Length: 430
Ligand code: GDP
Ligand code: IMO
Ligand code: MG
Image (cartoon, rainbow, N blue to C red):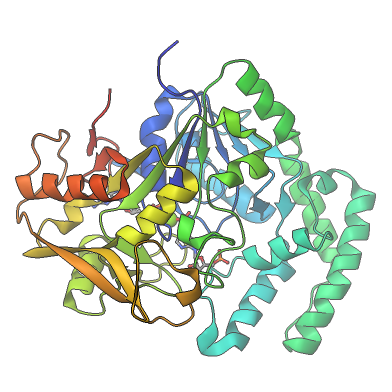
């Protein structure tokens, strides 16, 4: 038995793509189970080591490690076809996927009409569009909240599946046809397709809540892998420019059926600067050569959609909000190396909105985009930190940068990432 916290949640502390995949992969050696609790294949988590490169969407990043058991929790929305494709791709890359991948029977299914509705709505919204990943995530969570969603368990009961598909397809078809002038779906074909997917997925489908609690009772160590980021949370993010699930740590309880007392540590993953994909407020955004430099050097292009990510300075109002809502025990600061070439680096310490100063994210101001960020300017270190593995090696300016973040968020930075690979990491705690 070690004195480390047994179960740890790794969550995004900004707008997603913070490097959660890398951190989960790095830490999961010490864990037995890796579980996702929300989201779907809108996520794109990158894992790199040596000459290997994997992009995970639905499957927890722990799958790369043989012996780790991976669960897709009830809080997720799963496109069975996308899942089967991901399994096939990972197997082709040499990853073993057998009894180590399990799916909660209470997770919800994404159907093709969800995706069609997502795309149709985005197009109809014009400039007010959210900039979704177009995977049907929002409409699938709507079906869930509307209580007519199709759950994974329904795939195992052909009569129930047929009835549910007939009912929901008729209704969604009417919206697609009459509101959006789009093609409709044949329920018979959907039924046949989903029955086929069900056959292939059936051996993995379990009661995820019972299973994960058995693991916890048996003393197994569980890592909870968040998708997206805290600012994309449906309740706490920059609504309506958010995803449709609870990305915050509270989502672990509802999205897996795990009691709060079983979450022993929460690690917030944050980039050393900020990015976001899609629309919505971004107070520290840089629409200039410096923003372009961050995008190029940080390779800031979406893992799922390939879209260029918006880039900007680190925002402490965001991190303080993430720290409070998630009770962060530690921060994993990623992509420090991307800042290596700047003469000066800025950190936003607060915003002025209509004359009032905010040092956490003000929900009411989201729609106005009227932020005046207050910055502290740091001298750049102008030398390579790429691949460094000890804190002592870092240039003094980089150390100051990290310490300032710790002071302002009152949270320790225990991991510093200095490159995309597993081995390019500074661990500041044994
Ligand atoms: P996630 O969605 O939070 O898992 O993050 P993504 O995988 O979508 O995006 C993070 C990107 O940054 C990936 O391409 C990673 O390989 C890369 N990355 C992660 N950490 C570092 C780092 O410390 N330095 C650099 N240069 N790249 C990193
Ligand atoms: P990972 O897990 C970054 C964004 C989309 C859009 C909004 C809603 O890789 O960090 P959705 O398709 O979920 O309805 O889109 O959320 N978004 C992400 N941005 N990283 C992600 O995942 C994201 N998943 C969704 O760009 O703005
Ligand atoms: Mg990503």
